[in-house]
Length: 438
Ligand SMILES: Cc1ncc(COP(=O)(O)O)c(C=O)c1O
Image 1: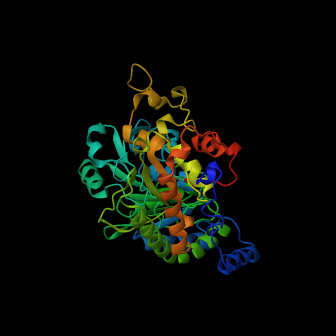
Image 2: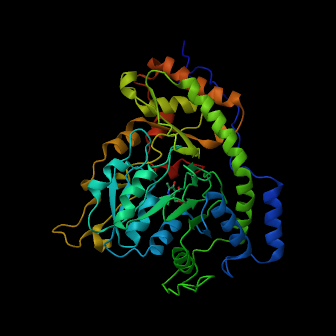
Image 3: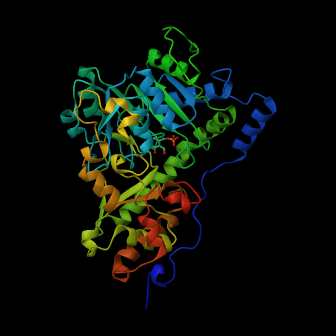
């Protein structure tokens, strides 16, 4: 008799997990207050809530200045402009990340240089950076993900003597801490996203933090249509745009920031319990817990499903089965950006890809980052953070569901099922079936 829900057995869990995003009267009151104030937009810049929130957030992460803005993609664009990126400059990026880490590099007519990720952390592999440097390298742009940090000690050791800027993409790392500094505060600038799925959210939104006043001023000017910054000490004019955040979003974010530490503790406790339950299960792999990470930011719990241990039964089959047991999960959460259908780069549109070359640089064929490719297409399993925001019993259910599938994996051999087909779909295809964005 079938045991797994996907083959007709009883699902391990029917009860929904805690809903995301979380809100309370605090958010409602904040919204009402902005509504009544009739002061809704980002101008005058920075407006009251945006300014208060950005200052609190920067302080919480250990930086001097913060600018709240439209979203995390724009935050990266703004940070690149702040350090004075020039056309043709090269930016080291991890291959395994969201396309929004890399898009701004191309938009500014700079050149992304993809470096593979560390198999133990899934973050930029600092051991591979030096061989990717050239005289044009201007920025290293690590992304902290999978409850880990890229090795910032090593990245700063490489960058500092060479005058290379470090911009941390912290879209997954709100509240995280590397040694004694918050995410985004070790490098020159840190960029965060407040998109719906993130650890703090206002639906859309972002923030750039830095302790460098000159970068802060340039960033402010770029976000506010090129106007003088609030301090205007460096008097640098640049063409800017309207990347401001609204007061509604900023007011929500103030409330979300207050809730973050408690949520982080609950998530971490449940994730630790979950990991302990599964540790040592043949065929599953766990990422490194680096002692230098003093506070974990747990945006997604990421572990490895090793298909070779399960007679080649695919990750998509495993995930389809897990979903049918009642556990939200994902595999193709990210693709190596250079291979992604969401990254259709035509060199004709990005002139720097042709400069000083016989042939334009073809990002799709130039790179083959094996750790990123294996993570993306074979082994990485991503579990969203909100399912760890409940009780220990919830965490036990998730662990029990994973174990149930491992124990009955044979039922998945040769199985065709819409839930499996869904798990094989790339992010580019998903809007056809997705109701929520995770
Ligand atoms: C790693 C990473 N970088 C950048 C971004 C871009 O943020 P946003 O969606 O707010 O533009 C995201 C958001 O999904 C992300 O996950």
